Amino acid sequence: MWILYEVIQSAIDNSALAKNVQDIRNHLIGKGTEQETAASEEDLEPCPGCNHMVRKTDRVCGVCGSALRDWD
Image (spheres, rainbow, N blue to C red):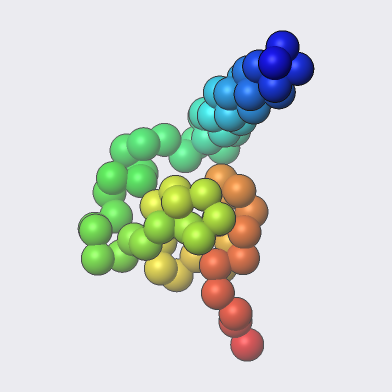
């Protein structure tokens, strides 16, 4: 039971760590929440990999790096 607890706790810690790393990355590249909210809701869609809102014209999710669509 203790091992299962440690695995779950590690996953929770890693998700919090991933969020913190993403916040730092966004700050360093100058991509704040004000830029994300500047796009109209019609221009946004959820990333299939992480569910982060991305522009419909984006090729790759800036959060998880998933390819959003096939481009010729």
